[in-house]
Amino acid sequence: MLKFADVAMIATDKIEFVEGNRDVAENHKEKMKSLIEDYGFADTIKVMKQGRRYYALEGQHRLRALTELGAKEVPCSIIDWLDAEDFDEVQHFIINMNAHNKQWSLYDYVKSFADSGIEEYKHLRHQMIVYSKTISNGVVATMYDGVKRSHKQLKEGKLKFPNREFSDLMIEDISKMVSQWGKRKLPAQALRQAAFMIVNTNEPYAYLRAFKLAVSNHLSSSPEPIPDGDDSFAFWFENTVQETYKLLKNVK
Image 1 (cartoon, rainbow, N blue to C red):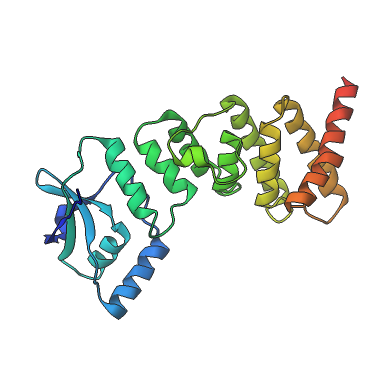
Image 2 (image 1 turned 90 degrees about the vertical axis):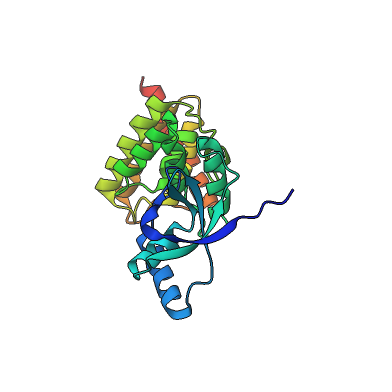
């Protein structure tokens, strides 16, 4: 049976944001303000009612834009078929509705599941924030889930850490490397591939040590950055990191 939401004008000061949604991005909000100023507002904010309050499930950028433009009330679609006490149901609705508008970033997914109290996501969100100046969120995710791209399990709330202790060590070490050499010489795509390869080896600690030494040798002797193309990085890894790993093992 099809579900249809009632539409009503609701005072903006009665609408709150809900946990599990993404943060408001200032640049996207400003874009919404400009569009609304130029063309008007011909949409609705999707809300859920709980008691006397309403919670924005979809359209929070537009709601913030409208509020800043002076709107005292806005047209809303009232979603009355969700269980407000069921975080998973509400979160699932939020993700699927919002993902068709401004695409969710990895951080948006991580924040959403962290809000639900899942420890892996709370830790990953913390690490993304702490290391944001040196390491991209995509690289951080790869360090912790061992997946190079897409991160399907992460986006479905099924994130598992292969080795959290090692990932904590790796992110600290690689952050220091980026601080030393800079992002131009250690591009994010190269770090993503390195993280993927190292996490998925049988000896990640040894390969991390070999990677650090190989990077230092390369950047100390060459003005060229670490190659970041898939094929070029794989060739570099096989001919530098793996050789360095073998030398370190022989030294022992």
